[in-house]
View 1 (cartoon, rainbow, N blue to C red):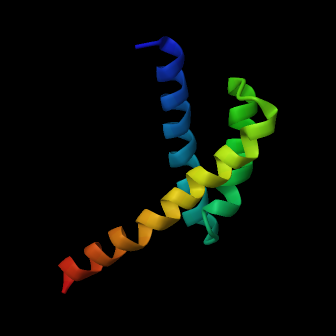
View 2 (cartoon, rainbow, N blue to C red; view 1 turned 30 degrees about the vertical axis):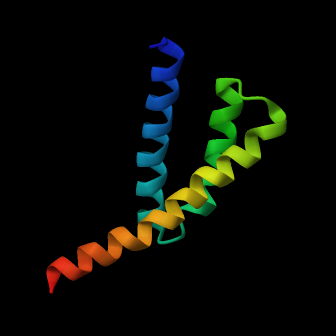
Length: 79
């Protein structure tokens, strides 16, 4: 695989960890932190300007689709 792919994946992983921690620390929704951070990360990585915001929003919306199911499964196991 290409080195650029690993740099992209590692950057997204670190971005997710940092913004998740910040969202938990400040008690606000992760999307309000994640979208602006992803915008600047994608700019830094050289993603074309015309699709940066769409990529940032779609990554966050995909998380919003998965998170409720994970939370439900976690709370069901605790009962």
